[in-house]
Image 1 (cartoon, rainbow, N blue to C red):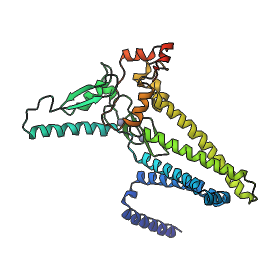
Image 2: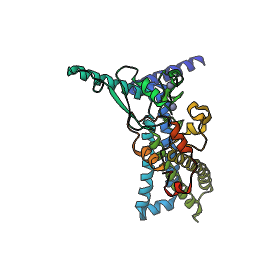
Image 3: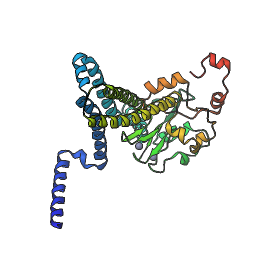
Image 4: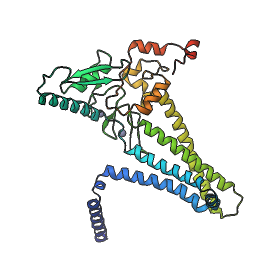
Length: 347
Ligand SMILES: [Zn+2]
Ligand SMILES: [Zn+2]
């Protein structure tokens, strides 16, 4: 018996070694699990859609008469899968990458200044980083490796110690809104949450992609649900087990639709108020948010600007948000008057 087990193990090991030789990326367990997740997701979509086309003769008939209807539906399925792959392979915005970019840009600039034999004045030998936030256009000039530290400290209120802002896991100074993710083992800028479904974090650089993914996935589930209901309501005699399978899948689909709709609404609210899931859920545990009243959104710049920045302005490496000043917080916490409503203060 032990000989049979040994032979099986050696056969499996040899097959795996051959597989890893052909596809080196599969030798990494994390990559294998990420690939398994993606394969499962594609399979799940194909099962829900495939069964519909397999069982529903009415849909096949409709496709013959009105092909555009099915083409549109299949295009939505394709767009959903593409959006999933784009989101899951995108970077959420890691603090360490931005820190390196800041320092590397600085080094390149210094080298070019030396090569042209120009005096390295503080203006052309340094890196200027524009920090978005309460003091737009605030600049930081530095020419040493601690540029990142100074840049980050400049975003906190005076008196904050470097130690309290340094991540104890990756030893990187965290700007406001960043958090260490234990699954990614990196600090993520504007950390929202680590998404198991995507196999990556959702943060500053991919929150918009994540929102669009939920949006197209919800639309696809709703359309599929309508097709399932149309099939079950059709007055055609068919095998009972086909109905049983379709009802079971429809129940699973209905739960997914409810979850996705709530998620879409929740993330739309976060976008309009410039918050993250982490900030909303753990507000009392974040030192710089603890003192701020519940109904005040410290990073909100008005609905329109929040929306514009969410959609367009997240690609810059240096768009980090500093903490609002006490005056700005006071202004944000001021109760709404009739004049505020008329002048659209919230926008
Ligand atoms: Zn960290
Ligand atoms: Zn993560």
